[in-house]
Length: 354
Image (cartoon, rainbow, N blue to C red; front, side):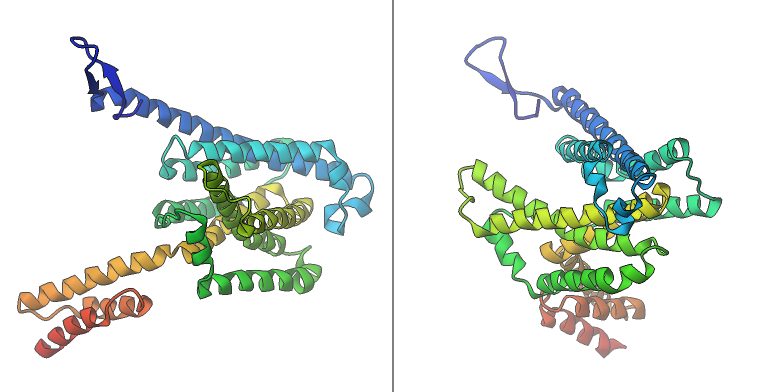
């Protein structure tokens, strides 16, 4: 129970008193462990799903070669084991989604890297795949780097309604990103994949990750539409809802096709960590563009450096050259959110005493 819960008083049944912070501690700890269990379960499900799908693809490869994913076939759609892998991945994503309701993102997100370790262990045991020392070190460094990025990435700006989201979608930078993703994906699919797809693991994973960044934004938009509908604000007549629905279906379909191609040709223990890193990176990039996360961070930095300059001026000392240069650099990064006169005045005052 939360701190806002109430209990009946012992002296007067009509009086209620708020629970003390100490009484809410067991509830918070319970939520923490529930979130932890869900996050670990999510990693186990997702990590296992790669192995199950790989087993299905190997079984298919031993039969009709023309039906292999790497040959452009879709024979895996008739394999019950492949569908079992898809269902397992769906369960993992559901557990991961639920974990965020109980535990902080700083705990849940890094635990997502466990899925890579689960895949590496199971692929070694069940698929007899081996990684050399450099491969293991590379996987560890990639996971560490992506985890650090996720933990320290700025929190996204809240979107209260579909109208707010529609307004953000009109931003020129976001439109440029979406168009760029589509064009780059088409270039990879049409030109790069036929030539280098079989020899370079990055090719198919790049397609999955680029389209995956759009699928995450689409899922979030669809989730917002469902949330508003359940709260009484009908969104079933909103064309944007069906746009998100169609986008989710298209993006997920493309991801499945090219992820299967990558799994069919390369070791699972290599596909999983690279896909995890690429996917996480592009999702952070797409979210930061749509929700203007990093622009807000630059504004804070700009104001901080400006205050440093003003403080040095008030002390009658010349501001260090490094601080002065940083203020100019950060000011250039976010010209639309910081008043030019603020930094200009501080720089002019410091210029006079140099």
